[in-house]
Amino acid sequence: MKLLLLGGTADGRKLATQLHASHIPLIYSVAGLVRVPNVGCEIVSGGFSQFGGLAHYINAQNITAILDVTHPYAQQMSSTAAQVAKDCGLPYWRFHRLQWQQGRDDNWQTFTSWPQLLTLLQAQASVESEQASQLCPFFTVGQLEPQLLRLIADSSLLSLPQLVRTAVKPKTALLPAMQWLKAIGPFAVDDEMSLFKHYGINALITKNSGGDSTIAKLTAARILGIPVFMQTRPSLPPADVEFTSRDECHAFVCQRFLTF
Image 1 (cartoon, rainbow, N blue to C red):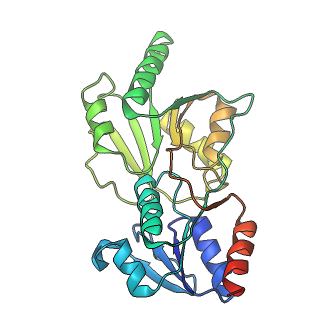
Image 2: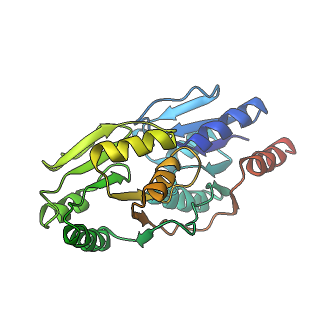
Image 3: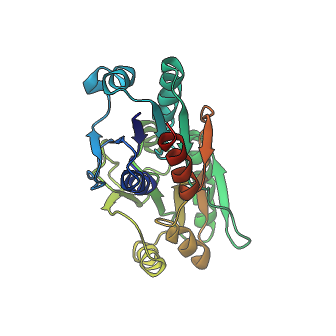
């Protein structure tokens, strides 16, 4: 038996390390965009197109189960993995950390699409204008998609100062008023507050990634009274078993593999 662990997250790296230490035969898959982790087990980087697709790779490597620990917003990868697992007759398991929950003092507005976000930001820009201020949004949603950039370019937000933070260089050219900041979590609350104040941030755009690594920006926004525009998680196909606890996931996989 051999496990294919689809990773690219801190949880994926930690689970790969745990499972390898428990003598579970596995291959750890990462996109390789940020860095290749040191997990001890075999690693495949750069996707499966180089092998003729995921199904071909699974057959060639004699994979017997898939554990999906990709980012909660990696909708395409998760959907592909679920379908390929079904086609190949393999169990498909998924681990996703719990979502962040809005607190009493948080000012969150949720959105599901980029056009919806643009409408919300334009409304917030009007609020700031009425207070003799200027909207300065802070984007922490990973790579900015071309659709979002086009929407902003064709809107009244084009000339407004905007900060974009990603772990790697943007794939698509940013707009002239956008400033790029390269950084990788975990982040501290005091540092996030200093950053907000330094750039004059008064709107935070983020995904509901969950976890502790980047939650400091939400705490900083709460303390400073800054509105948060939260992208809801995408719908994913069901997994055979789903986990929100790394320890429970580790124990389950070990039980399944070590009893055969």
